[in-house]
Amino acid sequence: METPGESRAGGLAVALRDALAQRGGVWFGWSGDTVERETRGVRHFTEGNVEFALADLTLPEYEGYYLGYANRALWPVFHYRVDLAHFDESDFAAYEQVNRRFARLLAPFTRPDDMVWVHDYHFLLMGQELRASGWRGRMGFFLHVPFPAPEVFSALPQHQRLALGLAAFDLVGFQTDRDTANFRRYLVENAGAEILEDGRLRVFDQVLRAATFSIGVDPDDVAAQAEGEEGVAAAARVGKITDHRALVIGVDRMDYSKGLPQRMEAFGRMLDDHEELRGRVSFLQIAPPSRESVDAYQVLREELDRLAGRINADYADLDWMPIRYLARSYDRGTLCGLYRLARVGLVTPLHDGMNLVAKEFVAAQTPEDPGVLVLSEFAGAAEQMQAALLVNPHDIAATADAIHRALSMPREERIERWQDLIRNVQEHDIAWWRRSFLDALEASAGVPA
Ligand code: ADP
Image 1 (cartoon, rainbow, N blue to C red):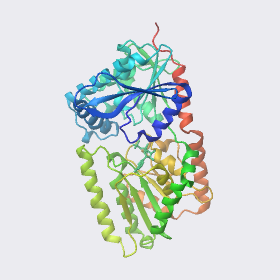
Image 2 (cartoon, rainbow, N blue to C red):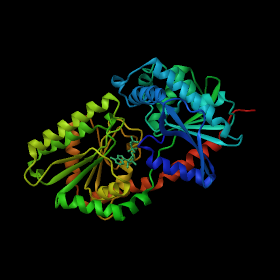
Image 3 (tube, rainbow, N blue to C red):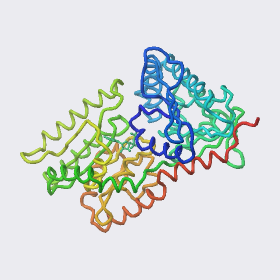
Image 4 (cartoon, protein in one colour):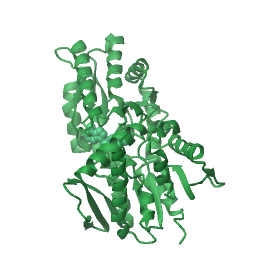
């Protein structure tokens, strides 16, 4: 269950659809459409052995539930930005109500031996609401974003209510061991959870398992796209402009969690410090605006425009532009071709559940001449990708140094680091993630009849 309205849905949607196509099943979620008044049912259609059941949101639900509680309260708090969070009781009421309404819409589609897999922070209360609708079968939840330290999670006025909701699932999955540990610590310290011998938690009269399942990509597909028609064409177009210069690439949704201003400042700082690199390296940042109607994004947009403008004004020359910043999105083939062309991938979020761009960048490289990944230690991916150049994205000088080091890294070291990274990306790919979560869910019990 998820929200196809999110841009992240791309790779995830494909992976989950594959899982459903293999086993047969129901895909249930928001249609991505908003309507004036509540529509009673779901839009229902079948493709192969997958049934789709899609529900609309009303305009007030979209405002209160989606833009409001999910994106103005949960998203910032889960990304450690309590300062940007906006807590509004009526937004939470809408959140609760949509979780309830969707659970009631889903309930008739379930059969006793089914497994229900719920995705992401939009549906934290779905498990509890499904149980209230009479569902007794196995039910798992996966959180794609970070689970913050308990002290930060507790800033949410409804934190107890949310924890109670999550505890209704038999299995709760997280991206990293850090997230899993945060969640467990919250339950133990704030809700008196007891840790059972097998590692499960007993809390609120429920027993649940909390574990790590780090999401991956499909590396073969990424490599094929990088070498495909679109990928090659994109690399040729950009190659014409960058000419002999090294390309540094960043690809993100425009979001304040991605550390984009810090990244631009670090690139500018590197040019300040290394005169010899001026005119010899180009930074291409692709960042389409997302959730434009949320104020914080408008502020970010203006800051990025200002920073890119300033750095370019300081350093650009008649035949060279240091930063090319494109506020639009590109298809996968194009992105993969550009990853492959790049000498450095800059993935420096301030906080990120996993960050799939880091894994895509690695999967797209040429084995004999790979680029270097500069990765934030606060991206979930850092737990698995220790062979990247890890940086603290708040430390502008250290990030500038890391970009410089990446640009001057000898080929043998680049190959060595890349081999380490690609091994992990291949081993823990998207199919592995899906399989390991479903196996764990299959092994869970549901509620005794
Ligand atoms: P998030 O889920 O926070 O957006 P991830 O890095 O985990 O971050 O996933 C982003 C996905 O969206 C990746 O598969 C990536 O290729 C894609 N994506 C990110 N930025 C863009 C963009 N500018 N244009 C097109 N696709 C993008």
